[in-house]
Amino acid sequence: MSVLPIIEIGHPALRARARDVGDEELATPELRRICDDLVETMRAASGAGLAAPQVDVPLRVFAVEVGDNPRYPYKPRLRRRVLVNPVVRPVGDEMYGSYEGCLSIPGLRGLLPRFAEVEVTYADPDGSEHCERFGGLSAGTMQHELDHLDGILFPDRVEDPTTLCTWEMFRAYRQDAWLESIEPLLLRFPGESSPGAAA
Ligand code: NI
Image 1 (spheres, rainbow, N blue to C red):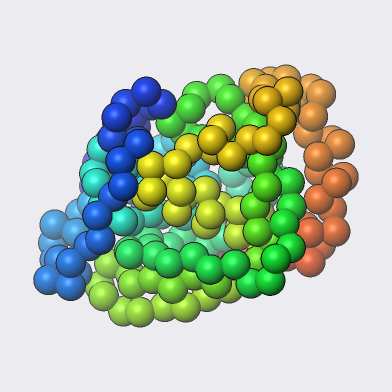
Image 2 (tube, rainbow, N blue to C red):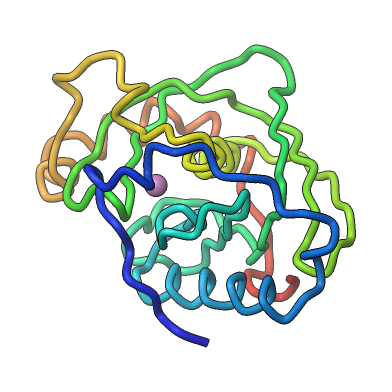
């Protein structure tokens, strides 16, 4: 496995629509290697998720994992998954205010609306089909990573530009009030129990 360079906002590959992974590509050594590299690169950068376009691979694939993450100490746990050709559908129309950052936009955070609960269908790298529901900040992670596959970056969805801030200023002036505002959501969707236990 390799840690790959993460490309940053301004790179045209972050604005392109990624292509579907073909059935004939599932369970191949090439796809497995890309998926393993995505996970390794995400972990090395302490990301909660990483999409293939962020390492300049134009495929509809992203990885997610939240354990004890120093970058996101408040994030509910989410087992490691690599999602191939994911489809994300909202469950209901409830939204919440998601304060997000992105490994391709170093230093910046901003507040944007996300669906509070989503259903995600995807294949794993071996080609098995999955359908799972995610809620709260984990649902937000799914929507953020899916956006990368469509060339969308989180600032595109920020409605109030005065919420943009650096990580240091987020921690100093924004984090407490934001966490209080989403406390009911964190209680409803506390996260998974054993990070890293399942693929
Ligand atoms: Ni991102």
